[in-house]
Amino acid sequence: MRVYLVDTGALLTNWVQKNPDARFVAPSSVIEEIRNRPSIQRVESLISLDRLSIEDAQEHCIREAQKAATETGDISVLSTQDIDLLGLAFRRSRNGDEVTVVSTDIAVLNVARFIGVKILDPRGKISHDVQWMMKCPACGNSTKNTKLVECEVCGTKMKRRSVSRRKIK
Ligand SMILES: [Zn+2]
Image (cartoon, rainbow, N blue to C red; front, side):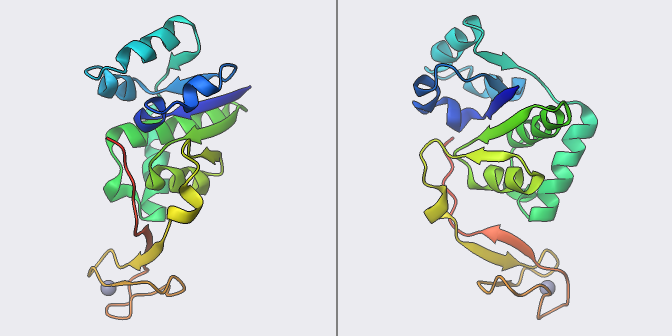
Protein backbone atom coordinates (compact mmCIF):
# COMPACT_ATOMS: atom_id res chain seq x y z
CA MET A 1 0.00 0.00 0.00
CA ARG A 2 1.22 3.49 -0.85
CA VAL A 3 0.91 5.99 1.98
CA TYR A 4 1.76 9.66 2.24
CA LEU A 5 2.97 10.72 5.66
CA VAL A 6 2.08 14.38 6.06
CA ASP A 7 3.20 17.06 8.50
CA THR A 8 1.56 20.34 9.44
CA GLY A 9 3.23 22.25 6.62
CA ALA A 10 2.01 19.72 4.06
CA LEU A 11 -1.53 19.75 5.44
CA LEU A 12 -1.65 23.54 5.11
CA THR A 13 -0.84 23.47 1.39
CA ASN A 14 -3.24 22.78 -1.49
CA TRP A 15 -1.28 19.67 -2.38
CA VAL A 16 -3.60 17.54 -0.25
CA GLN A 17 -6.68 18.76 -2.21
CA LYS A 18 -4.93 18.18 -5.49
CA ASN A 19 -4.39 14.50 -4.74
CA PRO A 20 -7.89 13.16 -4.10
CA ASP A 21 -6.92 9.49 -4.42
CA ALA A 22 -3.98 9.52 -2.05
CA ARG A 23 -4.07 8.08 1.47
CA PHE A 24 -2.62 10.37 4.11
CA VAL A 25 -1.34 9.45 7.52
CA ALA A 26 -0.26 11.87 10.25
CA PRO A 27 0.83 11.42 13.86
CA SER A 28 -1.56 12.69 16.56
CA SER A 29 0.91 15.42 17.56
CA VAL A 30 0.56 16.96 14.07
CA ILE A 31 -3.22 17.02 14.37
CA GLU A 32 -2.86 18.60 17.83
CA GLU A 33 -0.65 21.29 16.32
CA ILE A 34 -3.36 22.18 13.79
CA ARG A 35 -6.13 22.02 16.42
CA ASN A 36 -6.24 25.78 16.96
CA ARG A 37 -5.82 26.80 13.34
CA PRO A 38 -8.59 27.64 10.86
CA SER A 39 -7.42 24.73 8.70
CA ILE A 40 -8.54 22.23 11.34
CA GLN A 41 -11.92 22.08 9.56
CA ARG A 42 -10.27 20.97 6.35
CA VAL A 43 -8.25 18.40 8.28
CA GLU A 44 -11.31 17.12 10.11
CA SER A 45 -13.18 16.71 6.85
CA LEU A 46 -10.28 14.65 5.48
CA ILE A 47 -10.48 12.46 8.58
CA SER A 48 -14.25 12.02 8.26
CA LEU A 49 -13.85 11.11 4.57
CA ASP A 50 -11.41 8.44 5.67
CA ARG A 51 -8.62 9.96 3.62
CA LEU A 52 -6.48 10.98 6.55
CA SER A 53 -5.74 8.61 9.36
CA ILE A 54 -4.02 9.35 12.63
CA GLU A 55 -1.37 6.92 13.66
CA ASP A 56 1.50 6.97 16.11
CA ALA A 57 4.75 5.10 15.84
CA GLN A 58 5.89 2.76 18.59
CA GLU A 59 8.61 3.88 20.95
CA HIS A 60 11.35 1.90 19.19
CA CYS A 61 10.51 3.51 15.83
CA ILE A 62 10.66 6.96 17.47
CA ARG A 63 14.10 6.10 18.83
CA GLU A 64 15.26 5.00 15.39
CA ALA A 65 14.01 8.28 13.96
CA GLN A 66 15.99 10.20 16.61
CA LYS A 67 19.04 8.15 15.79
CA ALA A 68 18.70 8.82 12.05
CA ALA A 69 18.24 12.55 12.69
CA THR A 70 21.33 12.56 14.88
CA GLU A 71 23.29 10.89 12.07
CA THR A 72 22.27 13.54 9.54
CA GLY A 73 22.85 16.38 12.02
CA ASP A 74 19.23 17.57 11.82
CA ILE A 75 18.08 16.52 15.31
CA SER A 76 18.53 19.95 16.92
CA VAL A 77 16.08 21.64 14.55
CA LEU A 78 13.40 18.94 14.54
CA SER A 79 10.26 19.26 16.63
CA THR A 80 8.45 16.45 18.45
CA GLN A 81 5.97 16.37 15.56
CA ASP A 82 8.82 15.96 13.07
CA ILE A 83 10.30 13.03 15.00
CA ASP A 84 6.85 11.43 15.35
CA LEU A 85 6.40 11.67 11.58
CA LEU A 86 9.81 10.16 10.89
CA GLY A 87 9.08 7.39 13.41
CA LEU A 88 5.99 6.61 11.34
CA ALA A 89 8.18 6.37 8.25
CA PHE A 90 10.11 3.59 9.98
CA ARG A 91 6.93 1.85 11.13
CA ARG A 92 5.18 1.95 7.76
CA SER A 93 8.19 0.93 5.70
CA ARG A 94 8.70 -2.06 8.03
CA ASN A 95 5.09 -3.01 7.33
CA GLY A 96 6.02 -3.16 3.66
CA ASP A 97 4.13 -0.01 2.71
CA GLU A 98 5.47 2.29 0.05
CA VAL A 99 6.11 5.43 2.04
CA THR A 100 6.39 9.01 0.86
CA VAL A 101 7.12 11.71 3.43
CA VAL A 102 5.42 14.97 2.43
CA SER A 103 6.82 18.00 4.20
CA THR A 104 7.76 21.63 3.64
CA ASP A 105 10.65 21.29 6.10
CA ILE A 106 14.04 20.65 4.57
CA ALA A 107 15.39 18.96 7.70
CA VAL A 108 12.46 16.50 7.79
CA LEU A 109 12.90 15.69 4.11
CA ASN A 110 16.62 15.25 4.58
CA VAL A 111 16.18 12.68 7.37
CA ALA A 112 13.44 10.89 5.41
CA ARG A 113 15.76 10.58 2.45
CA PHE A 114 18.46 9.24 4.79
CA ILE A 115 16.01 6.62 6.11
CA GLY A 116 15.42 5.54 2.53
CA VAL A 117 11.79 6.51 1.93
CA LYS A 118 10.51 8.74 -0.84
CA ILE A 119 10.22 12.45 -0.19
CA LEU A 120 8.03 15.17 -1.59
CA ASP A 121 8.01 18.91 -1.03
CA PRO A 122 4.47 20.01 -2.00
CA ARG A 123 5.84 23.36 -3.13
CA GLY A 124 8.36 21.55 -5.31
CA LYS A 125 11.19 23.78 -4.23
CA ILE A 126 13.49 21.56 -2.31
CA SER A 127 16.06 20.93 -5.00
CA HIS A 128 17.20 24.53 -5.31
CA ASP A 129 16.64 25.59 -1.75
CA VAL A 130 19.02 23.24 -0.05
CA GLN A 131 22.46 24.48 0.64
CA TRP A 132 24.72 22.43 2.83
CA MET A 133 27.37 23.18 5.35
CA MET A 134 29.36 21.07 7.77
CA LYS A 135 29.23 21.82 11.46
CA CYS A 136 31.27 20.39 14.30
CA PRO A 137 28.98 19.08 17.07
CA ALA A 138 31.76 19.48 19.64
CA CYS A 139 33.25 22.95 19.14
CA GLY A 140 30.77 24.56 16.73
CA ASN A 141 33.31 25.15 13.96
CA SER A 142 31.55 25.32 10.58
CA THR A 143 32.55 25.31 6.93
CA LYS A 144 30.89 25.33 3.52
CA ASN A 145 33.32 22.66 2.39
CA THR A 146 31.01 19.63 2.57
CA LYS A 147 33.86 17.29 1.79
CA LEU A 148 35.48 18.05 5.12
CA VAL A 149 34.75 15.01 7.30
CA GLU A 150 36.74 15.87 10.41
CA CYS A 151 36.80 19.18 12.26
CA GLU A 152 40.00 21.08 11.56
CA VAL A 153 39.92 22.56 15.05
CA CYS A 154 39.26 19.56 17.30
CA GLY A 155 39.14 16.49 15.05
CA THR A 156 35.51 15.55 15.77
CA LYS A 157 33.41 14.06 12.96
CA MET A 158 31.54 16.93 11.26
CA LYS A 159 27.77 16.84 10.74
CA ARG A 160 26.02 17.99 7.61
CA ARG A 161 23.49 20.79 8.04
CA SER A 162 21.35 22.69 5.59
CA VAL A 163 22.04 26.40 5.52
CA SER A 164 18.75 27.64 4.14
CA ARG A 165 15.69 26.37 5.88
CA ARG A 166 12.17 27.26 5.03
CA LYS A 167 9.81 26.17 7.69
CA ILE A 168 6.10 26.88 7.77
CA LYS A 169 4.80 26.97 11.31
ZN1 LIG B 1 35.49 20.89 16.36
